[in-house]
Amino acid sequence: MTTTTPPTRTGTRRRRWGASLALLGVGLVAACGLQPATAYTPESAPGLIEEIPDLPEGASITVTGKNFTEQLILGKMVVIALQAAGFAVTDLTNVPGSVPVRELMLSGEADVTIEYTGTAWLTYLGQEEGIPDQQEQWEAVRDADAENGLTWLPPAPLNNTYAFAVRAEAVEELGGISTLSDITELPVEDRTFCVEAEFNSRADGLGPMLETYGIPRGASDGVPDDNIRIFDTGAVYTATDRGTCNFGEVFTTDGRIDSLDLVVLEDDLGYFPAYNGAAVVSTETLETYPQLEEILTMLSDELTDERMRELNLRVDEGGEMPADVAFDFMLELGLVTEP
Image 1 (cartoon, rainbow, N blue to C red):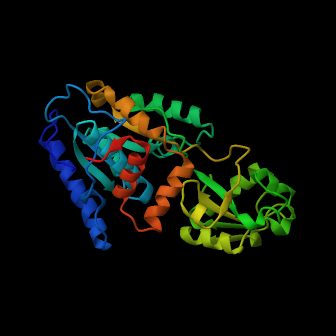
Image 2 (cartoon, helix red, strand yellow):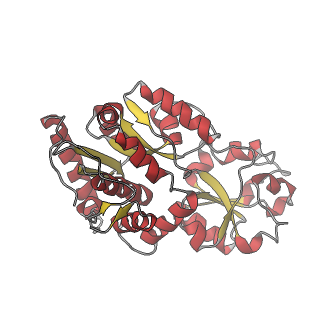
Image 3 (cartoon, rainbow, N blue to C red):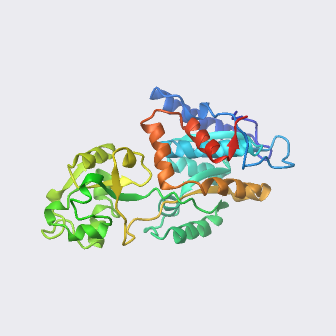
């Protein structure tokens, strides 16, 4: 079970701040009529993740994460992994928003989170352009955040970035399309797009993407404005599946890609920044418990776009608890065992 044992190396300020954020997360979720994600974590026992030998009695560690489906699942994975390793874990997952999670990590109120390289680079570190190459983006974030007392462990294959998808049955109708560059070979009337309002207007959104691929927005021989439809985020997937447009803006780890049988097109010119998930650990904590690197890397190595889509779908459409989905995944891989 998740415990709230006071950390052995921190004081009252950390405990009070953590309790406040935990209550905030509970309050927001409770207002929606849902059980807070932090209320439940299945008990587990060591598996491939072994209990750390000679771990000090009462060794405590705090895990944080954001409050959307994928982050709830990933956060619970980390909680389960560290419990199996022998830690008393304070669970501060389900925090509303990226910035509060970042502040928890920078202030030392939390020890571990799963963060996205592109988010750190663009939002936290204030860079104007992302780096499409996944390894280069991770290295840039790793090096920059070292000065902030944070260590980025090797990234997961999981890359939750923007993409465009097409309904499977239209792939052959559109000449066997598989890349974004292939859109340039289509007649103008087939270059139809469904996007959300934010992506439609942002500086690194639809317009610059179309320019990069040589089919400028608003041009009669590019993508006329009438070819672009604006929807709420969730409705983009449905509209794409129904053929309202040929190409819909998606996130690469969204489970609806699989449930609606959509095909993600390759970003062959590398327009979209990399958003690989990676474990981020307080450097001080990692120096105290260097075994964390092996434990968390063992977990992140198993996280791919395809696996994450399956897990997200079980929560979003199957109605399962993020903690149960996380535990089943780790149990299947033998990372942990039944207690």
